[in-house]
Length: 122
Image 1 (spheres, rainbow, N blue to C red):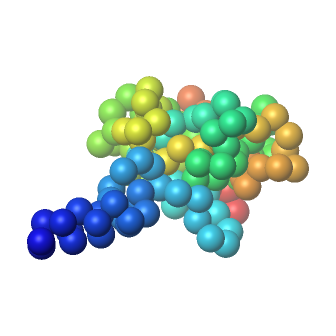
Image 2: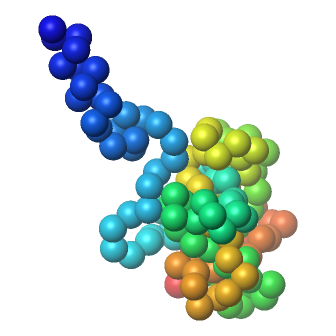
Image 3: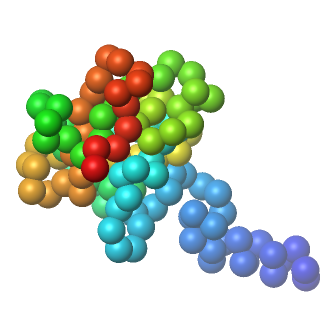
């Protein structure tokens, strides 16, 4: 009986509470300076609602909110702006939907080739 109740509680729990998948979209505003680790960029508009945030890849460094440096090892992606690209959305810490319309994005990013330049622009 106890195992049945435990199974029922786990079944009714939201996916984030069960530890399944990436972080869901937060309520309120998104803090781009708190996003680091493994990141999966989603381009399929049908999966946009399941993403943590909407991001725009800015071609100009001056207009970006966060400068991103791609790390090859997830262990070194431990600060804002240091992202390790994930090949699988299920293993990523964050799943971000990439939009082509700047007005629909929560924040804008620009990729840099210099690690020390990575981080938030304030």
